[in-house]
Length: 293
Image (tube, rainbow, N blue to C red):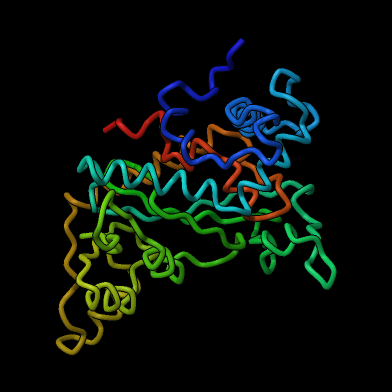
């Protein structure tokens, strides 16, 4: 019996060519069945040992998730979806950027630190601090996300929960890389970036202006007060298009869709790489909702 969050035939047809070949000559567990099991665990947030037996042994699911995270399979799936959308002219290059904090369960702490003699997969997945930090609510991780004007995830970045938003904006944009089928360079810059007041700083505006990217963000109240106190030396207020800014809500809606998966709304994974990449459907660009307005 199929679960409501199992991959559809159309979704499987898109990602099947990108899946790695079986190390056992095709005798291993079916990839589609494994992904459906990973999706079930992600949606429910249940412990791996509680995954229904119809998806196969839980150890197989967890091992494939770890392996596909390390070899970049999820990144290739997202890149293929972006390329397909770009070739169809469906990527709208007005990016919305925001972040959200997710609480970390106590099981998310205690990841093994890489050291001499560590297994290769520990070295491949380990990150300093594992994007786990302390904020007012306790252990947490912050997800920074950039989406296009239709809510298609373009870039994601994980930091500790107490990290600021503005320092991550340029880092996010530096990771944009959308290839096209056939020859040609990948596109790396949006036409416009929409962000809330947390990203509104003179240094950010100057950096995006130097890149030729339009930046729409309301001015912070303390910045506006400081500018007015300086009188004519304070300069003009930054341009702000309120009508264009209304489109920023797509990133909020994308977060809302992703957090329907309880395994993303709360962090249980010890590895930062395992937390975000454990969402094949999110890596497919919110496949169920990318056609919504």
